Structure formats: C-alpha cells, structure tokens
Amino acid sequence: MASDDSEQNPYTRPGFVAAAIVVALVVVLAAVLSYRAVAEPDDPDPTTAPTSSDPTATAAPTESPSAQGGESVCGLEPVELDGTLTAAPDTEWELVGTTAAPSVEDHGPGEVEEDGFRYCFAQTPTGALLAAANVAAMGSDPGLSPKVAEHLFAEGVGRDVALSETPTGNAGGGVRVQIAGFRLLDYSGESATVDIAMRGSNGAIAGQVFDLVWEDGDWKVQLAPDGQLPTDVVVLPDLAGYLLWAGA
Image 1 (cartoon, rainbow, N blue to C red):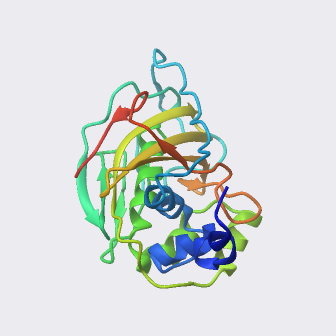
Image 2: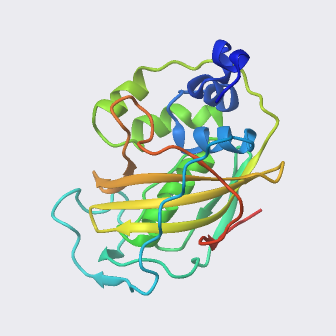
C-alpha cells in the first residue's frame, strides 16, 4: 500500500509520474508506465506478467494483405496473417530521446521523420514488435508525444482522451530506460499483443504489455476508455521468459 504522503502528493500518482518523466501527454503510456515502474522498483505488490504464447509456432507469410486496415501506409510488402517470433530479429538501433529505438529491414519503421518520429510497420509479427518498441522509445522524447498520440494510437474513446490531455509537470526522475527483451504473446494479421521488457539505469526491470490493432495501414496502440493502456506495468525480478533484445 502506498504511504499517506504518496497518496496525498499528486506527483506520485500514475498520470503525474508519467508526465513528469516525458513532459508530454499523460497517456503516451508506451514509455510512460514503463518508466514509472523502473523508477519504483520496490512496488510491494507487482502483478504477474502474462504467460507467453507457444514458442514452437512458426510464422505463416502470405502474399495478400488483410481485408481490414488496408495495405501498408508506406508500401511495406511483407504480410503475415499469423505466426510468432522465436528469436530476436536482426536489428539496427538508433537513439530517440534517451532510448534506443529498433528497426528491421523491410519490417519498419518505413518512415523516419527529421524530428525522430517513426511510423509505418509491416503487417507481420516482427512489424508488430517494432511498433510497440518504437512507441516505447519515442516516449522518452517529450517533443514526439503529440505525434505518437495522434498517429500511433488506435481510433476510439481512449485516443480521444489521450488527445485531450495537456502536458503536466517537468522532466525528472533521473532514471533512463532501454529495451531489454520481448515476448510476442499473441498475433494475427489484425491484432497483436506484445510484452516489452525495459531495464532502467538503476538496474530495475519492468514489463509493459501493448495491445495493437492493424488500422489505416499501420500498427496502432489500443488504449482503454480512460486513455491508458489496458494492462498495468509490472516490476520484473529478471528477464526469464523473455527473448533478449537490446541496443544499448
């Protein structure tokens, strides 16, 4: 249970902690909630991380995009309507804000703007993984938060709430995080569930699950009606069960 001081201090509540770290929309939760957990590794009651999907499954590529969501917004050609990942992809990493963001040839990001905003990910298991990881990485750059909310959150009430929020607080926390591993929990051509593990500069590890939907030719993060991610961040004792994947 949180202390009385924590309960009374608004800057210890989820939204304010998040905003203080990214100085941006409180619901850029991809990095926001992960940062909160890494900064608070002594949470007395962390929830249990979800169970991974069957690691023996293999990806099944097809040549035709799904009927819903359209073809890739930037023309990426690979399309896989089911499958999983049993190993980390061959990845290049580039610093965005303070976090290394991944890219994989032919799977995304297909577009990287001058300010570092990254979008367009293939309709593949690898593309879904990259979408979640890039949203997390972009959360460390406050200037990208409005673009992330506008272009990489799925249509719905949650996105509307995200867009209505205003930046709150100042940058702080002192903890920087880097992607450390992943689990692809579920995948179809229309949706995906990706668990990203992040390691803080203080050594703490946190996991955040991202629900994605294929929408308007790209992977978008699905938010709950309150504008936050549907699942809570969890503090992890180690990276057991995750595929190791890191650029820094």
